[in-house]
Length: 92
View 1 (cartoon, rainbow, N blue to C red):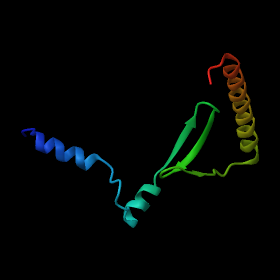
View 2 (view 1 turned 30 degrees about the horizontal axis):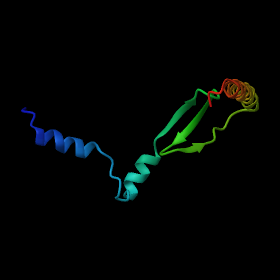
View 3 (view 1 turned 90 degrees about the horizontal axis):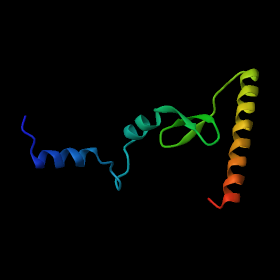
View 4 (view 1 turned 90 degrees about the vertical axis):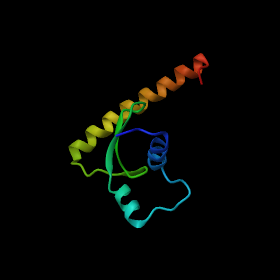
Protein backbone atom coordinates (compact mmCIF):
# COMPACT_ATOMS: atom_id res chain seq x y z
CA UNK A 1 0.00 0.00 0.00
CA UNK A 2 1.37 3.38 -1.03
CA UNK A 3 0.71 6.28 1.35
CA UNK A 4 -0.21 9.35 -0.62
CA UNK A 5 -0.84 12.85 0.77
CA UNK A 6 -4.37 12.77 -0.66
CA UNK A 7 -5.14 9.52 1.19
CA UNK A 8 -3.72 10.90 4.46
CA UNK A 9 -5.84 14.03 4.03
CA UNK A 10 -9.00 11.94 3.50
CA UNK A 11 -8.23 9.91 6.64
CA UNK A 12 -7.75 13.09 8.66
CA UNK A 13 -11.07 14.47 7.42
CA UNK A 14 -12.80 11.21 8.33
CA UNK A 15 -11.27 11.28 11.84
CA UNK A 16 -12.42 14.84 12.55
CA UNK A 17 -15.79 15.16 14.31
CA UNK A 18 -18.64 16.72 12.36
CA UNK A 19 -19.15 20.09 13.95
CA UNK A 20 -22.03 21.68 12.10
CA UNK A 21 -24.16 18.65 11.26
CA UNK A 22 -26.71 17.21 13.68
CA UNK A 23 -26.25 13.61 14.76
CA UNK A 24 -28.60 10.97 13.54
CA UNK A 25 -30.70 9.16 16.13
CA UNK A 26 -28.48 6.07 15.79
CA UNK A 27 -25.29 8.09 16.30
CA UNK A 28 -26.75 9.83 19.36
CA UNK A 29 -27.93 6.56 20.93
CA UNK A 30 -24.55 4.92 20.23
CA UNK A 31 -22.76 7.83 21.90
CA UNK A 32 -25.12 7.85 24.89
CA UNK A 33 -24.78 4.09 25.38
CA UNK A 34 -21.14 4.52 26.41
CA UNK A 35 -20.84 4.75 30.21
CA UNK A 36 -17.45 5.32 31.80
CA UNK A 37 -16.04 5.96 35.27
CA UNK A 38 -14.29 9.31 35.57
CA UNK A 39 -11.98 10.10 38.49
CA UNK A 40 -11.74 13.68 39.74
CA UNK A 41 -8.26 13.96 41.28
CA UNK A 42 -9.06 17.27 42.97
CA UNK A 43 -11.90 15.90 45.11
CA UNK A 44 -11.09 12.18 44.99
CA UNK A 45 -14.53 11.25 43.62
CA UNK A 46 -15.28 8.68 40.95
CA UNK A 47 -18.43 9.27 38.93
CA UNK A 48 -20.31 7.42 36.21
CA UNK A 49 -20.56 9.57 33.09
CA UNK A 50 -22.71 8.75 30.08
CA UNK A 51 -22.07 10.05 26.58
CA UNK A 52 -20.93 13.65 26.51
CA UNK A 53 -21.09 14.29 30.24
CA UNK A 54 -24.37 13.30 31.87
CA UNK A 55 -23.65 12.20 35.45
CA UNK A 56 -25.40 8.96 36.41
CA UNK A 57 -26.17 7.97 39.98
CA UNK A 58 -24.97 4.59 41.13
CA UNK A 59 -27.27 2.45 43.30
CA UNK A 60 -25.36 1.34 46.40
CA UNK A 61 -26.09 -0.14 49.82
CA UNK A 62 -26.39 2.02 52.93
CA UNK A 63 -22.89 0.99 54.10
CA UNK A 64 -21.36 1.78 50.70
CA UNK A 65 -23.17 5.13 50.70
CA UNK A 66 -21.70 6.02 54.10
CA UNK A 67 -18.19 5.03 52.94
CA UNK A 68 -18.55 7.07 49.75
CA UNK A 69 -19.72 10.10 51.75
CA UNK A 70 -16.78 9.81 54.18
CA UNK A 71 -14.31 9.65 51.30
CA UNK A 72 -16.00 12.52 49.46
CA UNK A 73 -16.05 14.69 52.59
CA UNK A 74 -12.32 14.07 53.10
CA UNK A 75 -11.66 14.93 49.45
CA UNK A 76 -13.80 18.08 49.62
CA UNK A 77 -11.98 19.18 52.78
CA UNK A 78 -8.58 18.55 51.23
CA UNK A 79 -9.58 20.47 48.09
CA UNK A 80 -10.82 23.38 50.20
CA UNK A 81 -7.58 23.50 52.22
CA UNK A 82 -5.49 23.42 49.02
CA UNK A 83 -7.51 26.36 47.70
CA UNK A 84 -6.93 28.34 50.89
CA UNK A 85 -3.18 27.67 50.80
CA UNK A 86 -2.96 28.66 47.15
CA UNK A 87 -4.90 31.87 47.83
CA UNK A 88 -2.51 32.74 50.66
CA UNK A 89 0.46 32.22 48.34
CA UNK A 90 -1.24 34.20 45.59
CA UNK A 91 -1.27 31.31 43.14
CA UNK A 92 -4.88 31.77 42.12
